Length: 541
Image 1 (cartoon, helix red, strand yellow):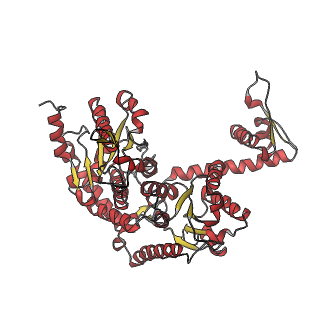
Image 2: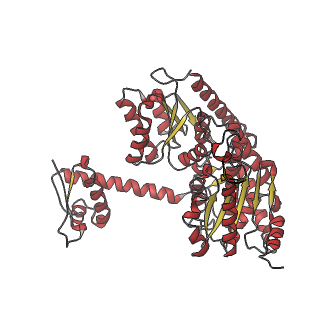
Image 3: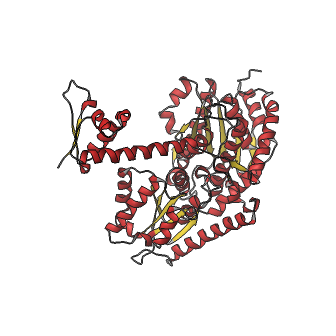
């Protein structure tokens, strides 16, 4: 039989389909070109990976850099936590979130103008924003209890856009500031901008603010001293990229009106299934094995996320951090240089069929696709979905075309030797989102064990933060030099402040300052035939 014939592919599909109907998910790996020998060969390595994950869930020190446990699995099943103290902390936090949200809805906690809160501004960065944004977009409806807005960067333009959108409703906006340490610059900057916006309208920021942060952190102390409405904990055993099912994600979701109990239940049920050691019953284990096979255990191919559902359009951004921050490591556990990782990108189908599927099918074969299929066409009731009710052709609706485009793209890629996996869920619900989060979290953990790297530390992120702080420190010296009445080009200024080796950084600082008139730095460009790097900078009146 032709191995690529429809009959052979159907047989392979039936053989390798992982049916997890108890959590409303199936995983199809039939379009990955592994041999019959691959799974048996990987069983010993997977036994070790399962054992390592069991130790992790039992409270082993998984982040030796910071002597921390890693316990995001306990968030959806607190009874599995290694101590009753942690169990009580998790349970009491969920209870506190529900109690707070109930008071907000009843108007017992209200804005300074005595009106009910109608909007939420979430201020965070990385895991403190990507998860909440993904969930908000995936599960939001016109019936949301509160409208959601986000500061997720330190870009003034982006924050101005959000504040302009809020307009007068800022007076009825509850701001949630999320930062474990309280010192993360992007979140702190966003907080200061928001605080200034409230103050400019004659409002006390503290009467509109809530903190999600580590106990005793800089933010925790600030919120307490300024009498913020509430403070919720972030624990050192929950990393940002796995924090969506902590107060980081549960508080914004509950305020929006999303059923957080269903999200937690979906994750808990998925955890129960992905602990199974039978590879043919465990979608997370099979995902990890497919990643290993496709990338040769070295991440040689990128992961393209293609969800065929607009509601899941932000899933690729969420997975970028979960996968790339966890797996992108220079060293393995033995200290050997391995430069591991899997690059993740994507958008949504069928949008991408009009964007980069052309390259996926015919260009460089340096990727594999993760399709996410959603069976139900609309999350609205049948009688309420105007779009799905319309027949675009006799007997054919928009959702039929979306399904057809998914199947067509999958086939077209396979015909040209491009590998893919498909996760199928019944519909986009809080429970399904919890399932997806848990399955990918477990897949990342298992894959990390297969390649012997630590998925739970991120020295590269800290290196970037330190480098950014060094740039700001240098900027202070540059500004002081200019304000003293000195001028010159980047090389001259760098030499004058004792930073001769950092002339390029000084040049970038000067161009940035000169582009913003309120900084009063003037850039005198050289003649047209001279390089721009010879520009002279000074302070204007």
